[in-house]
Image (cartoon, rainbow, N blue to C red; front, top):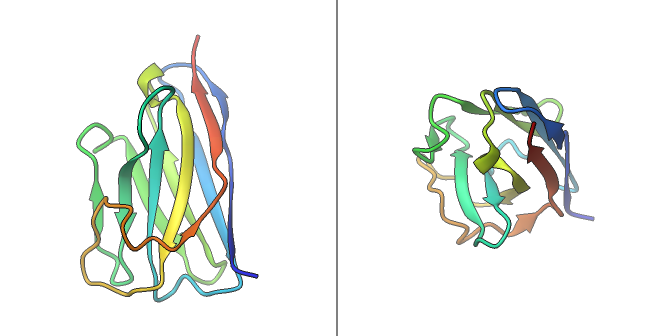
Amino acid sequence: QLQLVESGGGLVQPGGSLRLSCAASGFTLKTTTIGWFHQAPGKEREGISCISSSGSTVYLNSVKGRFTISRDNAKNTFYLQMNNLQPEDSGVYYCAASPIAVLFCSLSSAGMNYWGKGTLVTVSS
């Protein structure tokens, strides 16, 4: 069964850090394009970071310099390290994967065939 499972969400104070994980099963992440998406309360889901099978990365401007996407092909898991979290970072975070290998990824959800169920991040004092 093909699935992605996120973990690592929770409650954190402004300025704090969290690391989200996304474990894949049923397929290998090695040749996939993967991404993280964020849905704030009352807003549409948006792409915040992606990494291609070649290792190139893209970040939404609002998270650039604070968030880092990475992958561990041996563990079939990818991560989102989130530092200096702010209240506007609160919401549900989804991981997604596309089976299409590309040199450069984008923050679009188009082509993302596999989705996790999401993990909730709350940034509040």
